[in-house]
Amino acid sequence: MKVASSIVAIDTTATINGASIDTEGDRFGELLVFYSLGIQTGTTPTSTVKLQDSADDSSFADIAGAAFSAKAEADDDTQFWGVLDLAKTPVRRYVRAVHTEGGTATACPIAVLLVLASASVKPTTTLPEFDI
Image (cartoon, rainbow, N blue to C red):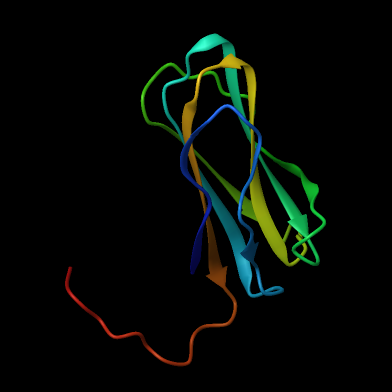
């Protein structure tokens, strides 16, 4: 499993190109996307998150079918999630989230977490266990 904050928690009214996560070829079978949205205020505010991929971590393009529909939430801390099956939807090496704010919204809190799961190659060493 590999976890990355593509868009760290931030109040925004702008488009944000998130940080990318390196999928390292075909090692992972699934990409889980967790999207957290805070209170939106303004005139018809919406929030949209989509995924993009890139071969070189520089030039990105939209991944077909990898977008959340526009959200217009008035509740605090609303959560959305999705799973991208990498066997059915192959992606290039780097993946990032992109957030777009629509309408005339005041700053809206948002965060997007990407998790690569179902690795086909398992680690050769075991990490030490610890109590929290």
